[in-house]
Image 1 (cartoon, rainbow, N blue to C red):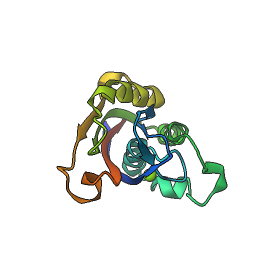
Image 2 (spheres, protein in one colour; image 1 turned 120 degrees about the horizontal axis):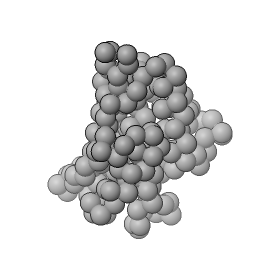
Image 3 (cartoon, rainbow, N blue to C red; image 1 turned 45 degrees about the vertical axis):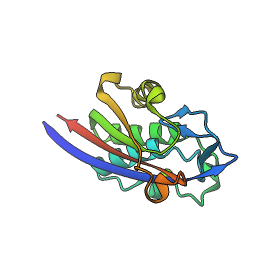
Image 4 (cartoon, rainbow, N blue to C red; image 1 turned 60 degrees about the vertical axis):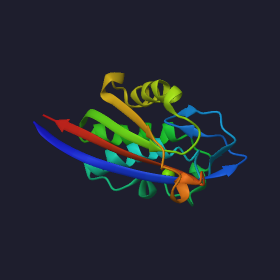
Length: 159
Ligand code: MG
C-alpha cells in the first residue's frame, strides 16, 4: 500500500462585520475572518494538507484569490473540489488531524459539529477526522484576537 502525508497551515485576520466560519460551521462571534472566500482557515488548512499529500500544489494555485469566481465562495465547496481531484488520482484519505489556534471565542462546544462537517465534505467516517483547539496564550496576533490560525495533517493511501 502506498501512503502519502501532507501538512497544511492557514491564518486569516479577524475583522468586524464578517461571519466566523470554521470547519464549515458558523461560530457566533463579534468578528469574523477576512478573505476572498468565506475565509474558513480550518478548511483551507485541510485542503492544503490534501493537496500537499497528493503533490497537487496548494489552494492558492487552484483557486486564485484574484479570480472573481471564488469571491465569497464557500470553502466547503473548494474542499469538496480538492477532495475530488485527490480521489481522481487514486488516493483515499486514511485520516485527518487538525488544530485551530484562536484566543476567542471558545471553540470546544463547536468541535463535534466541525468534525462532522469535515467528515461530510470529505465523505469520511467522523472517527477519521480530528479537530483540536488551542489558544495562543495571549501572545502575538492570534493572542491579541487579530487573527485565527489552523494547522492540518492528512494521510492518504492507495493500493
Ligand atoms: Mg485561507
